[in-house]
Amino acid sequence: KTQEHASRPKTAIFEDGYDIRAENDILFPHNHEEKMRRRIAQRVSVQEENKNPRNSVTVRVPATSANVGPGYDCLGMAVDLWSEITVARADKFEITAEGEGAVEMPKDETNLMCIGLEAAFKTAKKPVPILKYHVVSRIPYARGLGSSSAAIVGGIIAGLVLAGHKLPCWGSESLLQIASTIEGHPDNVAPSIYGGIQLGIHNGTRWQTERAPHPSGMQAVLFIPDFVGKTSDARGVLGPNVTREEAAFNIGRVAFLVHALCTGNLDNMKFGVEDKMHQPQRGDKLYKYLFPMIEAAQNAGASCAYLSGAGPTVMALTSGASGDIFTQREKERTDSEVAKAMLEVADNFGITGKLLVTQPVHEGARVIKVEPPFSSNIITYRDNI
Image 1 (cartoon, helix red, strand yellow):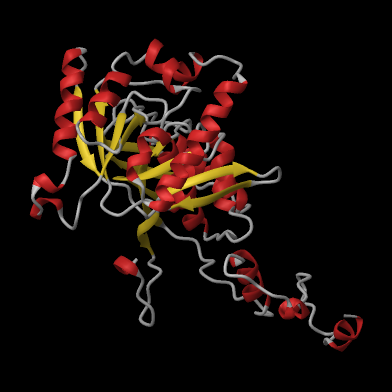
Image 2 (image 1 turned 45 degrees about the horizontal axis):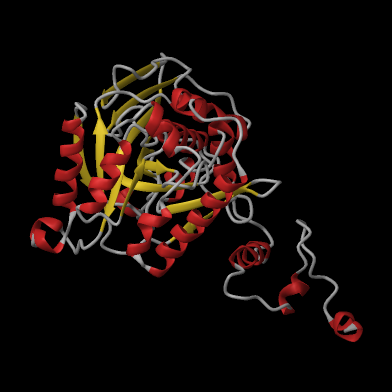
């Protein structure tokens, strides 16, 4: 071994401290962060890309469903329901909004998209210019579908683009660090950034997240009550202590849920979304319809059902979708029957609301329009942005 190390070149250490001699070490398929580190390090001079600030940007951000039953503050799923945030340089600060929650939305700097944007400019070490914001909101406000996280993530991305600043991802997930620091946990912001089902932890040094797969053909059936559910109220009904039995129950259920997702065993999902840390307490104190609706959805054919985030929305996951559902025979799917069952329970409890059928989505937030554009005569990016 001594002779091997002695034979390696002694001039392969770059300015960032990376030793190219480590290339002889074995890399396995899962070592993607190390592969990326080596790839970047081999570019002795890293080209400064897209450092020019932009004048305006529009960011598209998905709704998210946190917890997915037992994954309290650590598990979340992106949902195919999107809001758009447009931010532009201006002579006067202004926030305008249309759609869901447009009236309730703060119109000053306390708005979470402003806080996210300010964090981005702070990271770029640049002052925040005067800006005007316009929001087209399709995510129901304060209903347990991640409207706050969408505002945070959309604001950060808009700020980074306007400032002309890019962040490292591999081995650091810098965007996730900013968003999770503002939000306090990664269960909504991680799927908002990356899409899909994300399992997030704090590893003692930084926030870290990994994607869990979800089977094809899965749909999301949501009952969204007309009333607002405040996260502070939903957290307020939770006790300060968790028993060993409750902790063991939830640990087992999270593991069972992730295993069901990884293996495509949808029959096991109804056990995987069970929980003792927050759903029973919230169902007892705030949402009396919760467990009757979960039972009705599952009896009607749903793979599982659970309280989305802190509520009040209840989400059921179904299977059998193939291609465009409006060209598919309804008998091959269960979403219609599940929707009817959930609405019947809502009617029995005198709860008004709307029923939405959508699906989990693999993609997270992204820029859909920018001025000046990133595309050029040489390279055209998606949607010609």
